[in-house]
Image 1: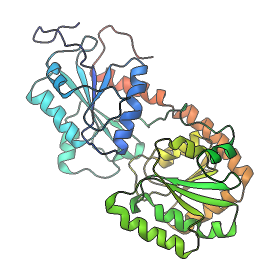
Image 2 (image 1 turned 135 degrees about the vertical axis):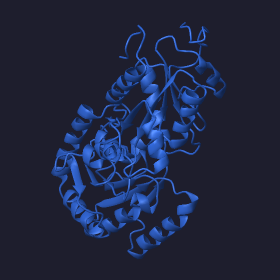
Image 3 (image 1 turned 30 degrees about the horizontal axis):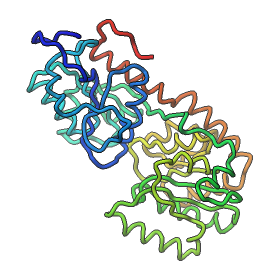
Image 4 (image 1 turned 60 degrees about the vertical axis):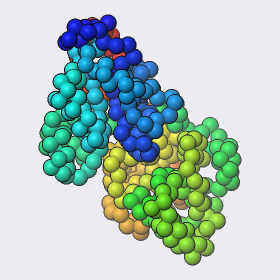
Length: 365
């Protein structure tokens, strides 16, 4: 084991890279950590999470392990603290600048807005910054490395039998299905999705729509109003609320078309998850969506946030089985070529190596 600056040997069980997660409730950032860490460890990175609310499958460092950061790791010049929230950047600065621990600070930014002065100050003191899209990078006032998220292509894959996939989640095998997945709230555009489909569903009886996701307490009123609006159109048996699911890949496999109707998004993984399952995607131009979807080949990016515009795009794809099949095949190939989780892991490893070079250990696979 390596000797620290104080001459002490670094304690065992303290990872080279720490991914703090200072939010107990599930969020997009937490989901990213949950997905990435097992893949990073499989690639040979010594990384663990720190914080509450993480499932058993994610390697974790106990809070008591923070004392071990006084010493240097065996395989790097310093440990890496990979923050994704302001609170985590603050904690990293305390470790590095106040406690003088040998750690380097990396921050991933997903925001697409101008940062407040305090956040700018924090970002300016990071050793490296990662942006999750070109749009995000444009809001930063310092250089960053753009690393688009990837997804698990073994988990998200096309259904061998789409009719069977529909039956497996309790949906009618003889219907075509358009879906919208995510938390149910105005920001996520769930109401735009429903409104855009009122006319197409009435004109195409072979189609139904599903909305999958959780409604938190503060958005129960929004859901109630949306359900009432759907019922007033006589479509309560055609636009189905199917709840939140941990096996969401099975629901993607049952789809014929996916719509991402968000009014705002930091990054947004749902289009990638759908395309990985060979499902074409219609999406608003928010988050990283325009950097994920190839316009006219794997789906469509909408020029505005109007339900009428979404309706026109939906009607076109809902009416053309051959076009959807072609787009779905291209979508899967596109995600395989550009958005694997392994690609994201490799790119993150290069950032870690740039701030805390390795000291003779092998690079990740």
